[in-house]
Image 1: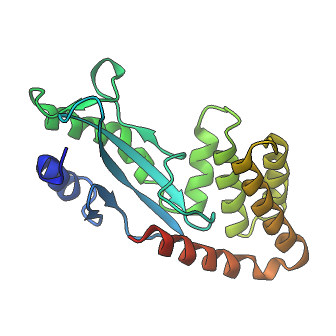
Image 2: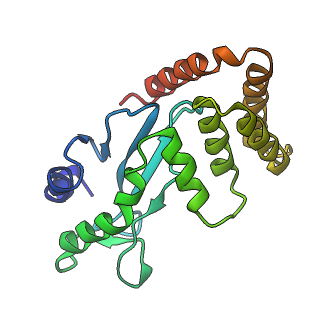
Length: 204
């Protein structure tokens, strides 16, 4: 799959659903709103050159990161809950447009840290560490420090420190906890710095 293969549906999504978003290659991304990045990603499939996937994501940039993070999003599903779309399928772009409208808009409409907390609370409780992390950092970003400390404690309990990537999350949580306890007045400014650093690494 190449950009030209999906350009017509990308144009329609931007024009009719998210007119303030912009295209960055195979991404459709939002302007940054209060530390939150939102968007859609198109990805070719190794199954065959006609197949592709579409993901919707919301990413709090004040959680330090290196890449676009799809852990707070979902894959856009088609008929029979299939996650793979076929370029040669009849009316594929029409079907995809309405799938994105119904499944994707509720995600990309999460524009603020407060909205992100509410959206996470509305999800089925699965104990996902990424959701816990995003909520904890969002609470801290919005000045709800006691709630943030409690959520960070819950996050740390959910981590398996035998897993390297969870160790990184744990270390970052400790850094934020120290700020919250010793210098809470600096938390928001520090998290804005993290947002700028994350955005820089994403190269959008």
